[in-house]
Image (cartoon, rainbow, N blue to C red; front, top):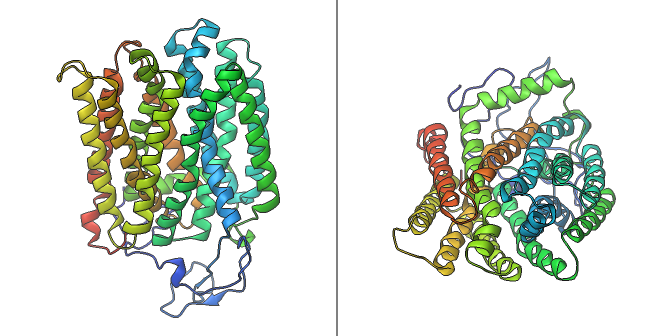
Length: 464
């Protein structure tokens, strides 16, 4: 794999120094959605050679994003956690409804994750070729249909199958939202915007279990999928009306499947990009081990009600949002993203270690409160890991934001899907497997960061 600063075949690797933030670039246009570039303004400075018969000086265009578009992008990134977390309080009820083992019902989560992973591999290159809007609207339409059918499932196998389709279609919102951010921002500004999106999308994990718990008070688990169907319809209408195209025709890629595969191969050949991709994916797996296991850990092992579980889940989500905002408002631009990421990974590892010691019986019988505290610290530290790995990886891929976003999302969801069934491997009587999976994923994430990203080799950078 090429070292930092080198280019793999078919892959243009940006220089290591931090890119110029959008706020410092030439400004054009001032529309509320700023999704259509205005007249280009040349930026003073040395020209960068461009392949082709002529090598004109590069032009860069600043784009302003209105509040409404920010909310739309936040809604797209919130849809996956909404689809997952609203359903979590219902897992024991689904288990009872179908008379299936808990491990089988957890496959409804795994299937959705696999779908989101594979769907991004398809939608990402499509968005680089056809633009962002068309693949997004198609994906959202299929998501609505699949979610509605989930509400009518008569067997657990049918539910698993349509959760897979739901994930495949819902992937469009995740991958295209990240690609749109890459279209509009670079460097420090991109990291800040990802933290802003975390504030918006972070509301979903807080309210989703609460909504799910309340829905279960008036109806059964099928009502949760009806609510998700209504959310999908509303978000699709908003996207169709207010999210304009952000990828100009002249920047779209031509070619079919072969060209898309070559682009992805070039991205994966960049050691640093792959390092950040795996670092973020493994950290996400530690988070998803908590998401997958917590309904059984909190409700079955510690005897909490669905409403108590929802409350604890919401508190943890508040921790993630708060730390994410500290990252975006206070740390980005003042502390290297790599240093912030390294600190976040260290905290995640320490929290996972503490959970392992508590669940293994080293401290004797431990109640719900210490376990909840350890999970709170672990989930809060994700506010340092998730936005910074996305920003650091996407900064290296301005030429293929859709494909890069697809690879980032696919790796995260595939690793998370593998981790999900492992947390229930010892049954419903112990939280020890959850802690083991979390610690292994945290240590592997640190290993990828140190072994592949190697930020010290790229020199001290003020913001990146």
